[in-house]
Image (cartoon, rainbow, N blue to C red; front, side):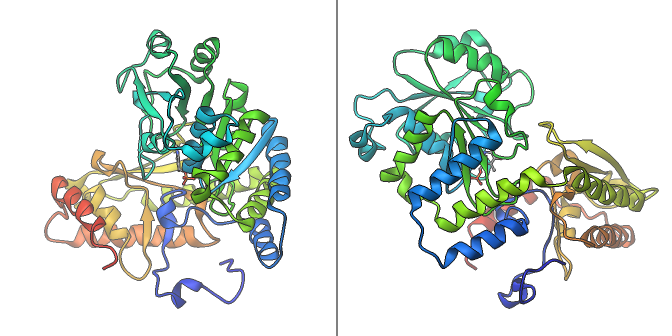
Length: 402
Ligand SMILES: *Cc1c(COP(=O)(O)O)cnc(C)c1O
C-alpha cells in the first residue's frame, strides 16, 4: 500500500481500514490524492503566498487544460454552483456581492430541468438558492422540451444550470448543445455542473459559459471545486470571496494541490490506469463465475466517463441474500469493503475499481467469496425487508456522533 509517511493514519485515529469500491464518495474521503498534489500541499503549507497571485496561477493552469479563458478554485463543486449563480446575479457590483443572499431588485431566477434536480449528498437546488436565487424547474422529471425552456425565460431570468451526472434522469432531457443555444439566444448564461466528469473540454465546447468540476474526484486533488469559463464570469465568481464565497474559500494548500493535480492529469498514463482497472474487473468476474445466484457483468459508466464497473446482480433465492444485505455484510468485519449500493433495491450492487490501492482488488475478491459462502450456509435467506432497511439507513443518520 502506498502510504506517504509514517504508516496508516487510520489505525492511529481508531478508524476502520475501509476499501473503497463505491466510487469517489465524499463520505469515504473522495479519492486517492495523487502524489504530485500531496507534495504540493505539503510544500506550500509552511509558506506565505499572495493568494491573488496563487489563484492567477491556478487560473492559467485551468485555462490551459479546459480551453477556457480563465479559472478559479473554490471549496467544492457545490460551492462552485452557489458562487457561479451569485456571479450571474451580481456581476462585478461589489455592493450587491455584500448583500447576498438578498438580491433586492436584481434578476434572480435560475432555470434547471426538473430531471436534473438531484442530490449529490445535498440538493443541487439548495446550492442554487444559497446565492439568493429562485429555482425555476423546467419540464417534468422524465421529460423536458426546448419550448418549455424557452417559455420559462423571462426578464427575471439570470442563469440556467445544467447537471451532468449519473444521478440525473438519463432520458427525455434537453441535450446541452440545444439547452445552451436556447439560453444564449435570450442572453441567459449556462452553468454546467460536471463534478464527476473526466471531460475537461467538451462542455465548454457544447456551450457552457462556466463549467464546474470537483478537484477531489477523478483528478485526485485535495477537496476543492474548479470553475472554468470566460474571464468576466470567472472574475465575478472570484469576487464572491468578498461575500458569500468567504465561507466557501479554499486555502493555499487546496489551490496549490489543484494546480499539481491538473498538471499531473496532463501526463497521467490513462491507458495504464484503465488496464489496471480492467485487471480488477476481470479478477472479480472470474471470482464470481459459477457462484449460485450471482451474475456479474462489466458495465460502462452512464455518463461515458472512461471507466467501467462490475454489476453484480443477486438473486436472493439462489444466493440466499439480498443485494442490500450483501452490501451491508461486505462493509462489516476486519476487512470492510464499501460497494456501490445506491441502486441495491433493484437487486444489484456495483463494484468501482477506480480507487483501489495495489493488491486491494484481491481482498475485494476474497471478501465477496467469504460473504457469499456465509450466505450459502445460513439456514434462512438473509433478507432485511426493503422498507425496514431504508428506515434503518435514515435512522442511522441522526445517531452521529454516537
Ligand atoms: C459530487 C457532485 C457534486 C458535489 O461536488 P463537491 O465537490 O463534493 O461539492 C455536485 N454535482 C455532482 C453532479 C456531483 O457528482
